[in-house]
Length: 112
Length: 113
View (cartoon, each protein chain N blue to C red):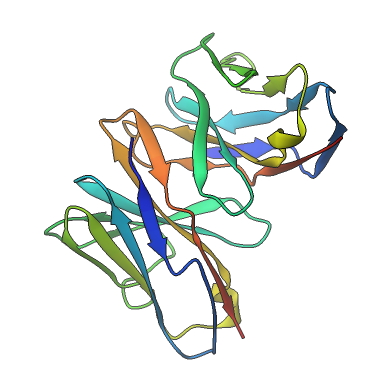
């Protein structure tokens, strides 16, 4: 079955540091890939997505590129802010974008 | 976009009791989804709730333990029955609009003691 593996957290960074959260996946078909973010006390929000190989999703300074050859979708940001502190989930969908398979989530803590 | 209101946001319950979680969406949707997030684990799909038909449960989840109602296109409930400490999790409802984006409620944090 489908699965998503992402790096363990928490990831602790100082403000303005570079961020990479690794995500790899296993899927039988050609999935769409997503990053969701969950801020403290809130629900999950879509951060970015990519629907085919070599697509780059981007939003709020975050980027991720759909790499079919390495089955990866790593999340990157060049300069993190304290407000980026949250839990980040990598996910995929193979069913016409209805149900999602999630990774375990990575907590990011950014200190001033 | 969709706004999802989920109640309660958290609860502490005694083992052997049941809790019903409500999910209200501000637009009509065909399918609603219920997920569980156990401590330190990823989100796992429990079931898909379609209006006017029985919910479809994923492997490992059964209707007797997690009965679901879907009385109309904007509302659903998930009941966690005969709870045990292993049911302590965050439960989330979700909808997908126009096959473009999934929206989630803020979750219900359940602790069973």
